[in-house]
Image (tube, rainbow, N blue to C red):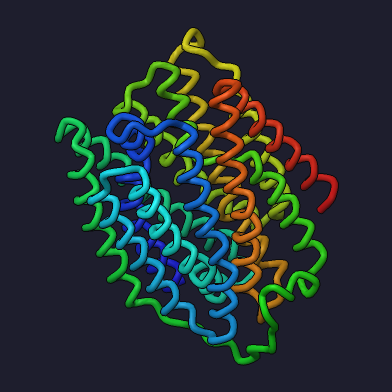
Length: 380
């Protein structure tokens, strides 16, 4: 578990840096740079999809070289460079570049890091290991959101000051990664090119990836949740606190959910998690300012419950179903397939919002979440 703990600390500090800036981006774009929801959808869709496309290749390379650490180090360093670009951004195109560079770093590091966690554990403890990592990662996110609120209010809306301070925890995260050790397999096996590997994956793994793709089409960027909160009467500063509630809930439920999946199975947790997501998005579609602020606080807390029930459990399920010699590739392929849906998901969300109103965005996302829950229940 040594690697798991160090990787968790690395993610904790990196997420402190990321979440210091992430909840501010929609307000930075709209209030400081004059961009609208459609531009936000384009930026988030391109950035997240770019990251996801890279994950299968970084996972494949880590399988071939049996070297996870170097790729993870390069990826975390890239995310720090993205923060620097965000600090100097003076237009939405520079924000796009900053987000793309940041997400390229995420795309490079994610599959090798998750494969290293899987390599460092066995199937009986894998769920709790991924749950622990997600809990530490999200605890960092909660701290980052809290710092974002502090700096944003302390410096009277000075976005650049917050972006600059985010470089400190980003650097600490990169340094911590130096204490991680690669774990080499005695049977590296022989694998082909990532583009030829779909038919070599187990059938159940392929079914799960298809269901995950369907779910992702309705799972647009979290920035739309923050914009929705703004439309329901929450100020940017209070919206940051809403995002803090989400991250605290996420961190609180991640480890118990991963541990529970070791006992009752991954599928049951994922079906319930997708269903919670669908209901939360329907809530964002139906609630209005007349529903009262408590409803929005509740929805953000439940959204954290959904993330805690699914994020680590999905990774553990993919690691369970994948052949050992293709583990990094399978984890990366899952992330890439999900990422293919992120660009149209955010574009659809932005266009629905612009032409039909915010409720349409969340009705669509809620429906896709419930559809994915049913698919997982009956097809896997």
